[in-house]
Amino acid sequence: MRFFLIALALFFSVQAWSQQSCKRSSTLFSFDQHIRPRLFTEKLGNHPQFPFLQYVNGITTRALFIKAVKDPQSRKDNKVEFDVFNRLLKDIGFVNGYKDVKAGNVENLFINPGTIGNLGFFNKESNYIYVRLNPAGEGDDGVAAWRLTGPTGCYFYILHTCGNAFFANDPAAGGPGCCKDVTVKVNTDTVNTAAARERPLHLMIRLYQGIIGAGKKRNTYDTAFRLIRSIDTTTLLKDSTGGRKANVYGKGWTEQWVLCRDTVLSLRIPLTTDTTPGDNKIEYTLADTSYIRLTASGKDDCHKKWEIAADGGASFNSIPRFDNTTQHTRTNGAQPVASLAFSRIFNHWFQAGVSAAYMTLSYQDDIPYAGSVPNTYNTVYPGQPIIPVQLFGKATIGGPLGWQANVTLSAGYSFVSGSKIENSGTALAVKPGTKGGPTAGLGMGVAYFFSCKFGLALSTSGQYFDNKASSMTYHLIALPITLGVRFRF
Image 1 (tube, helix red, strand yellow):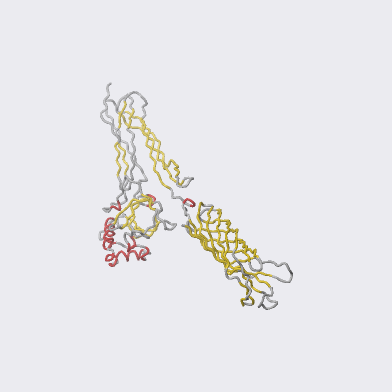
Image 2 (tube, one colour):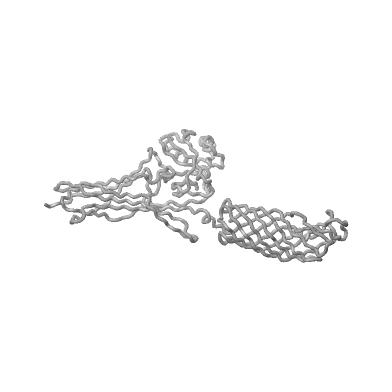
């Protein structure tokens, strides 16, 4: 029996519909299927599209939003921008534009970071860029936005910070993004004089996701793959090629699309047939991989190079001991201290720099200096102030965000000014005559960084001073306890 192959076709149809029909004449609602979204990490507000709707201009509630939309002053001060905004309202179903908008059409919500879509900006005229929205400076809940929904269910967003329009192309944000449900329809028809018969079709579909994240080394990336959906099924189809076995082949090809809810994708794949005897089963395999880029967190986010530290508090110092039993010394209590440091951050656990401090060294003794009242204590200031300028190195335990502990070693030279002796508040003619000398310190502290730039710190240290005076050489140790701020950039 002679068989003839009359026709063979295979159609794949993937369709997605929006819930309602929208006009959508603006380019805000159009997505280029052949480009990847640009990662947007800048702060919002550099190019406000609709400034009369910005949060900084007092638009904090739905009532104020509606008031700004219908305020004649908004149309007068922002004529070009308001015309663009009014056309967007008509695109989503408001026949009379801003006049039809009510509070019930406005919803205050947050857009998830990483949402893909078109973001508006104003630079002489309104334009739109295709982005993955992850702006800096927004809160932990996401990107604050107003959602404007028309009478037919169509909508777009106005971002609080910049007053710019945004339309999502991401199903996680409720946008028109890629279709969640995929319907595959296979139509085959082979005509022959022989009676039609059923043949098995083995269909395999594999959908993979590639996750691009930070690598172990700086400025490198790693990619991990996972299978997110698998379809492996066998169905029967009618075939009229007679008793001869046939194998169907399709030419392999790869293409990439961005599919929205209002996109209809129709694929027509040409097939060739081999009617030589062989396996009676037809097999078709489809595999595709989508990639997402993770936003690094923790230490990978903080690549600051410099730190400024400012501290203030109180300092206690040791007192000299005399080699006799007739002269006595005692402490003079806490003295104010302040310091400023500038350092280079080499990595998350080590930094080095230079510091300067303003301190006072003092104690009391009962030596009968000329002019002092007998049997009273004098207050001796070897330095008021004494300014140690030092080089230091600091080792840190902990990440750049949250809690961390540190140990600091320092060494340098101390400059002395204002050395004097007082008795009952009166300065005596006798002076210690203290001179500058070497100094060194060991410090420990804890800090908490609220962000990559800003933190608070509590520190204590032991600071050794070796200073010659007119009648003795001071070997004093100061114990400053300080609280301060840290700023990194």
